[in-house]
Image (cartoon, rainbow, N blue to C red; front, side):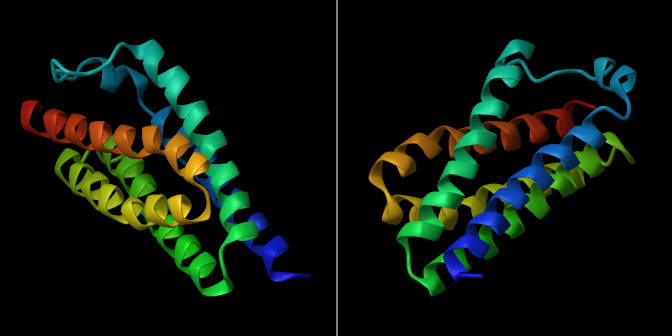
Length: 155
């Protein structure tokens, strides 16, 4: 199978792992979550239902675009940083919702923010339009990391 096809499949598979993995852990203890003191800058719940589907779709489109547009090494770097950022984000979901380790969860999201910077950079290198459309994901991960720190310091 050609490299571009394999890279596209891997990138989209990572998006599915991200979406399914975080969904599994986020739904483990909804009663516990509602007892937490929320940071005052937390967006209303409906925002989460809008931004996450958008982010997952854009990440899939970015994976396709990067695999089709960049050279093999750049695509591998994109996939590596994306996989690491997904691992960090899933670490957040697990640590926050399962053992309720809010401090470690916050650290994991800060790591995710840093790991998504090369993902965004390389996406821009592949396509100015797709890179621009992926900026809300980067902004959201930054907001989520501040929320994680907010939860960590308030609970």
